[in-house]
Image 1: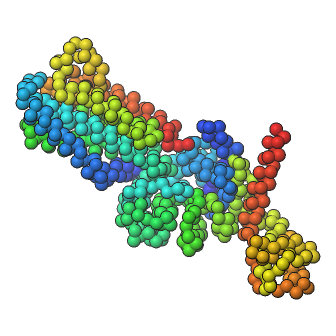
Image 2 (image 1 turned 120 degrees about the vertical axis):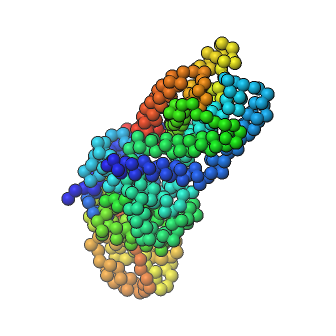
Image 3 (image 1 turned 90 degrees about the horizontal axis):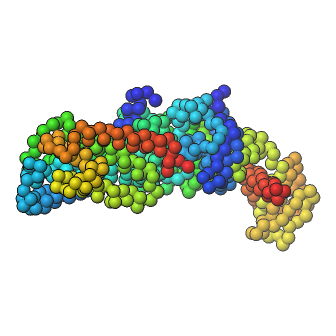
Length: 257
Length: 315
């Protein structure tokens, strides 16, 4: 295929993904907006006002970057895992498999589709947060880079989950039992400085902590970890997951007999 | 002339150890209308699945218009259009979107894809349904949608796996007409079907596959010439109590009381009527018991089953 044809194939996948999640906006776009608004009201306004400052900022300002990142992570992951698994389940994945689209274009298309939803939700949550607090941006490139790469990373994770899943239960196990605990314990609601030394060390093994703090650095200029280490870690994870996903596609894991 | 499809020594062993294909060789010439026939589980869908890269082969070579699927998969796929046995589109998407999206996967820009989608949706009588979600279509419409989707990138080789399964007679006939027209315009067509009448009516060359082996691979004409015996069913004016004895023609009565007469190749049908005339039996109508290809197909598959049993017994 020519570069132009490859781009057409890639954009077809991305557009189809965007069409899918906007068609079912009440399931995909509305719930995170409602959930995050509740977080802003309850944790930010009601409880936050009693907590006082954290990391030198009022509690609402402190949790906004984490909540945006939480929404981006879950939405990027959920979009790819549910879309790709549905295609497997309905066998419409065969439309792609019989076509000449290379595996890397398929992967890139799905990841970008997941990023479109994740970043779209991130934007919605950011706009909602403006009703509760004032956002100033400390380092725009760091903020943008962190959120884009994190979204890509979790879209890749969702893709691998979908490749491995054989039933619908399999696509909710990772989000429920891995992603949610790691996100809640990843410094969204608190600074790890509050934790005893041992638990600080344990927290450092949580990759989501680096992403939340990298993004928080971009917005507030404060972070529990070095933001450049955060970026480096995200890039390493992306490389590893992309390699695994491409190998699985090449072997036809779960999609070819 | 180039072969549209060449298969050499193709084998497939599934994870559970089942050997679906045992080293088959097959070639389909460009412009051919080819049927791959066989009973359920014979290996038809596995063969086509490997050609379309939906199934991983264990060994062997597949070439589409000379492009080896091991080394030039993308070029091979560009020449292929596939209509699978089961519905495999997103049931929630609109008809037009399904077809244009498929074109996009082949790198066709949206404007050109839309024109091509319109052409085939109109030809297949689905244009009025273009904005309907696929799940709202009838079974026949869904089949036609899959044909339109397979043709949107104008492939040179169209593979159809049981394209008329579950389709009513009228629609089946209109699909035959459509496929014949496609073939006349130069598209090579390979189909698998359970309706042997379909293969006899449409195809020029035929392969019969059973238990993962090609039993026969020849022209329909040559295959039908092998048919040494045909059974004719005669409806007589008066109901017969027993089958009459006709010189040189085995006879019997079927469950409805109609007379069945077996006629060997080279024997004239006239002689049957001479014999019946001699016995004072008047015939009001006549038909063949099964279509000719069906008779041959059943015989070959039965012979293969018997020889397989014999081999197993010897082992």
